[in-house]
Image (cartoon, rainbow, N blue to C red; front, side, top):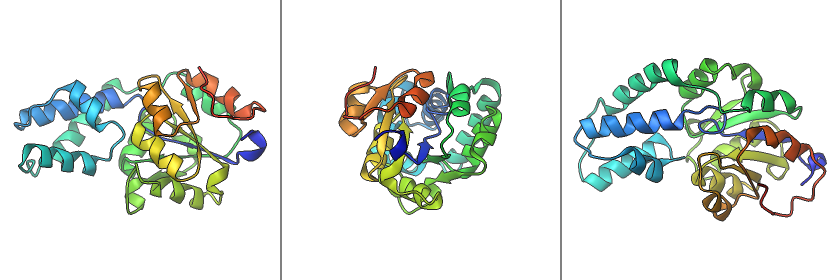
Length: 226
């Protein structure tokens, strides 16, 4: 797929646009442990990266064999918002990258609309997408199912086969691949081999390289891009 065959670039949000995952994972681990569900930051990162909140909560309750406190989600979100205001930054190089991409672009995330709006506002990226924000809450199933990517393509009036997706998680890559889209795996904080195995066509770890990758007249033969 060269530039003449790409009509839309779809970005995941957390880990691709904003460096929120370390913050979210830390708070999730801390709040779970306080509630009597002992778990480490490393375990949260390994088990839940890229999964929807509902999926994560269901896994926790099934693993520990008991229900989470009714106020657990609200407590997490309050702590996240406070931490975001103090710590959240855009992914390195993403602001420049978005400025260089002339193709239509949008966001497709497992997070809620409120979360997407908050993190993109705090990092100064919201204006780049002109309201074109799509959430797994808009569809029946979250990633790793393809629903949110197919929905985004439909809303943007674009054939899925002519969409490029930037993802950093295995569930996200699986979702975009299942939607029939070309997937660029962003591996700054992710396992390169796992992203390739999940269906990524290209792997890269410097966001500032991405515009050149989609603008180049290449054959996109599935080779790994360093």
